[in-house]
Image (cartoon, rainbow, N blue to C red):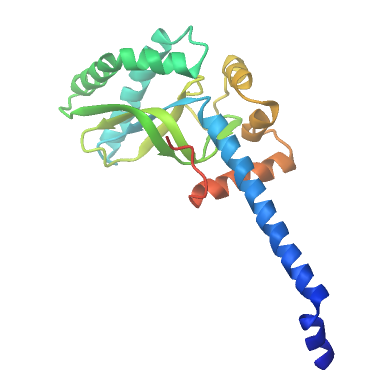
Length: 221
């Protein structure tokens, strides 16, 4: 017991503890810095869509998808030649009234009188997978559409580059959309969101999710 006590009280042991603690701090800072840069760069490359149904009733959920489809159809019309997120957001802002008009008209044509609120801002998103592309949780610029009381389940997707498709369980991300993502991200950033990534990249993605989920980093503006 005395020998063990002497080991704990030795200068060498104290130095090992101090160095271990400093190494832990350094590693943590590096990990947070890496995750923050990755999160910011990824969020800066996409513009998302968030549609919230009036309620979780089957009728309101079905209405949500009809509104979504009409908004995406219009988005594809005005942004088909966009080459950057900034250009897409600019066009959406210029046509914000049209987006609201389309949503309200769709609601009315389907026999409902719900109001619709349209907002363009920076909102929190959970981790979502689109085909073979996964985006980590965090804050993203998005068009948010709230139908009626907006108390129903959400629907999330990416408007630019266009990753939205009807059947998300079997959908395939268009190669053109992938190319746009690749052009706006580094090789490692793109590998990070690709479901075909290595175990090392997969671990980094989980690290990014962990920091975002615990509020240690955020791309919020």
